[in-house]
Amino acid sequence: MSLASRDRQVIWHPFTQQKNMAPPIPIVKGSGSLLFAEDGSAYIDAVSSWWVNLHGHAHPYIAEKIYQQALQLEQVIFAGFTHEPAVALAERLLPLLPGNLSRVFYSDNGSTSTEVALKMSIQYWWNKGETGRKKILAFKNAYHGDTFGAMSVSDRSVFTLAFHDLLFEVVFIDTPTKENINDSKTVIQQYANEIAAFIYEPLVQGAGGMKMYDAGLMDELLAAVKQSNIICIADEVMTGFGRTGKLFAGEYMINKPDIICLSKGLTGGTMALGVTACNNKIYEAYVNDDAYKTFFHGHSFTANPLACTAALASLDLLEKENCLTQIEWITASNKQFAAALAGNKNIKDIRTLGTILAFEIAKGKDEYLNNISAVITQMAIDKDVYIRPLGNTVYIMPPYCIREEELQKVYEVIKFILHQLELT
Image (cartoon, rainbow, N blue to C red):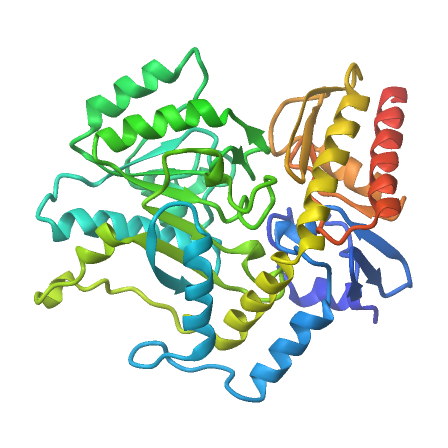
């Protein structure tokens, strides 16, 4: 029995309609930007395997560091104990993050990093005796994960439909434009004394369709939020570690977050790890003789030594000059390709930011369930390129190690697909 057939008997795949599901492609090996299938096919991973892979698959440097750590310490409870990889990673990360952040709280993925941030913010006000601040401010079209708190602060969409009556109350505003920013400021003033925190994906709303917005206007909005003494939470789970052209998207703004959430590229795509970093103002609200003001939150694999080691190795690679040069080259290449696509009547809203390029197919509804996604994915697979559109939003976000001929092939396949769609 093939691996795909065995999979079909026992596995439930994420974000996948189960009835009439296409057989999954069995991947047996990865190297650089390539994924190798059981039948010998090789696919260019143009989406970095759900945006996590920074330096290429099975990177030998990261693998060696994980191996050496596994021989020394693979896991230890993080309540009452500590270890070198966790402390060293926090020491490395904090000076790199936008804002004056001082503490790292570890979890195990992007959703849990936002859950930690939300709980941390709400309890901050509870610890301060201001129990009326329980609402969260968030953007429409947002996506912050699939756990209940993360769903609550995400847009009411197909991702959350079955749970709407169970989600807590959120004040939603639009991402800032010149036309709506004053309305958003009015909403902020109206609810200022009830809002605990504002959570946002800086400059790019990922799963919501790679929607991009202006840094200057976002800075103006953050200033208004801070003026109302609202905690600012930057969800940089996707935008962190160079994806937007800067190390973190928050670097584009003067106003910095009080809390930042990280995952995905944190370990270079090798292991699950989440980080919620906060400034000293937040942390000091929990430094108290009253035991009830403890932050009662944790995970079995909090600060897993192997994952922290992978993150340290990824940072080593990220800080090398050739990695930064690659990010700049991908950024420039995407801009050139976007310019070449301009005027194509089959697409709309071509946009780029850093290593991310996206546009909409001008066919069918602008929604996640637009079945054009499956059509495009299969057409690309047939040409040995893996892309996975978000409904009718086609995007690429390649690993930084992608070679010039590979990126050019991705572009050529996209142009081929657009031409084929024009003929149908």
